[in-house]
Image (tube, rainbow, N blue to C red; front, side):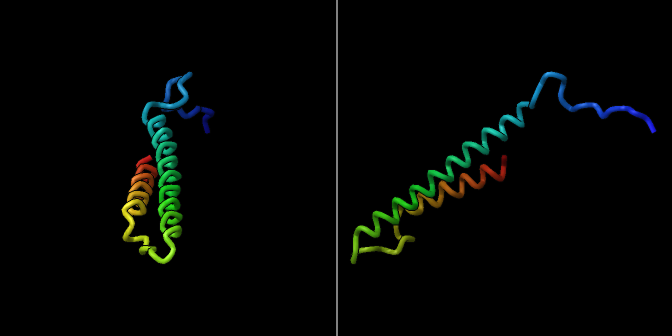
Length: 81
């Protein structure tokens, strides 16, 4: 058995390569997007509740669908990251 070490895929002194930084940044932005989308959806629900008897189903609210689309885009970003 030898005591050889496994070579590192990155040169000494370099913490991460560019694709790793891209993934880290994409994950941070995607999670911020998801958090914003949930706030948009909650805002749509609260505005709808304030209407009282004139409430609509939430699936009929364009702002709610916008929040849902933002959530889907954020989740896709996390998948790519």
